[in-house]
Length: 88
Image (cartoon, rainbow, N blue to C red):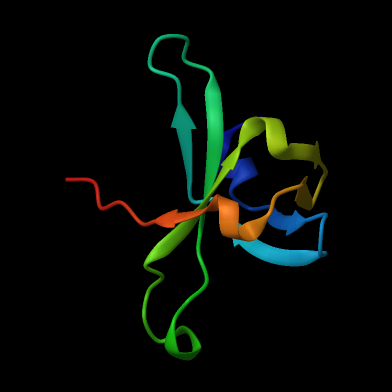
């Protein structure tokens, strides 16, 4: 599967059936080149007017299934939320 196909799928948490968003980035292991996690923008602040200051870092092992339209994950949201990193 190509990244352009992956980023078009909605991420749904199996624990609470909540839609988290769509894939915005991938985290790779530098040594093996394997995908370690997917990155999804976190919840917006102030009714979506400001960009999120957090993002979900979802380990690859937490992905339950990749379907034609959605990716099912099993995570505890508070554990997957991390401060958003600005890469320079």
